[in-house]
Image (cartoon, rainbow over all chains, first blue to last red; front, side, top):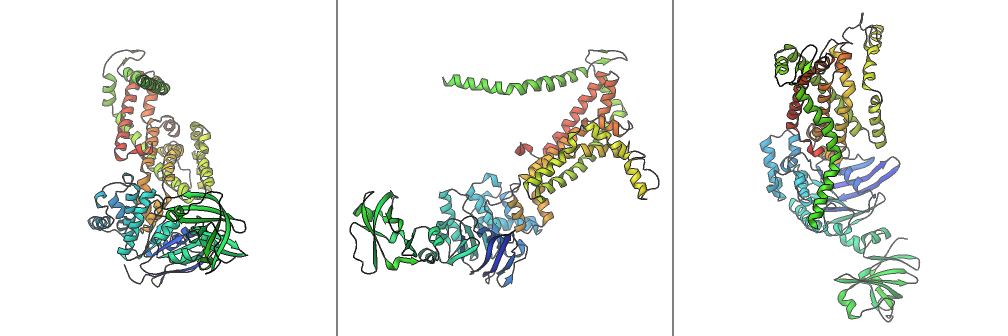
Length: 333
Length: 288
């Protein structure tokens, strides 16, 4: 696994007929990093991944991996490996033969390829299941096998297409941790497509938010969450209120808002809005309050349960919502 | 109460299964039992009489005609199987993997079934003006200057028999193979490509193994149909070749029912053993 494995996308475009699935995107993925391509379905994130993998050929633009232009190479010549959404394990082959498949294609001798495949299975802690068939494995186990099968080609980048979406919520959290651990221990780059912002926040060194075939914002999870570049991102990442205040679009994190019975003096850059509480949801560690201001519209406030129960409110109460001017993120209109 | 319900469910289960059961008993099991019984009967030139004797089987197994006819039957079955398998697999592959739109897949698939809109006897007979001594095939070949005089073996030959079999039964191979191919997840083909497999390696390592049940079901169709056939062989060979079916039909024509029954029993066992051997290779249960 070579060291110079920075991936760069240059003006990458994919057309399906007249529709632009991916519209001239540019992106740098540093070596040994975890990148999440995040966006709603149809945003072009999967097409981007498939172009990197070589399962779609780019209409225009270049893909450069480790200084080498791989735009038009066959999937196996790129130094990438892909893990498919439903894992795409061969149902007629045992776990061991699934993992050894790429070596069989290269005519590696049976004993040698089985030895290598065993090593890979040990890496993902599946060596005791080597003789089983995919249908005899649980979703999480299948995923490990798919990982081993992808990693046996010694890729410099592993591409994962919605790897956690087929798992139940509990397993999803567990595998999420394992993916991150594996990426760190292997020291290669993972590019992970997902539509779940939680997943992206938890895993990524770099989040790339895509929308309508374009990159809306690329940055660390902290940047993307705290400084959403557009209204779309603020809404998609969640935890934000997007309001139009005197003609200016603004995003305010719902946990940066305080509720009080009386208006707070507008000093220290504090702004207050008279509102009425419309809904209260108790969520365990925090309480989500929906309030309405005549000018700004609906606003969601997220309070810790301690804060809420110190001075509880009822539905229908008239209150003041306040936030600091520095917590306001201006958005392009 | 519970016991009563369980008994009632049991009863309903039996009742639901009974129509098929009755049909199979009346029209499959009983006739076969009848054939087995009659195969032990005796016959003279002008009468048959109930008995339990092995004469029919003794005669069958001591006659060299039996062996050559069975051999011929196997030859027809084998050659037809090979050709229909190659054709059927190719057609199914083209439909399943090269045609991208479902509408076209359905349209082309229906196109394959058009020959089945006419009876198979008519389909067979329609070959005669085409293949005959002065038929379209010979005329065209002479017209093109490829041959100087008509080819004799086109009609009333083993070639014609196998041609007709292939024409009649290729679809029986296409349908089950197409069915299994349509169930192959296309991401498996991408996974194979991702692992470096070229088209041929994907075919050998992924597609063919996953199509095995379909291939086996198609093979059973073709082998049983060809081995049980008699009319195709009679028409297309111009009564110059014989298979087991014709042996039986000749006996029936001469009212030699015991002898015909004995041959039928041996043919039935032969086909069953053939299928049994084929099933040892592939587990088709997954498909059912």
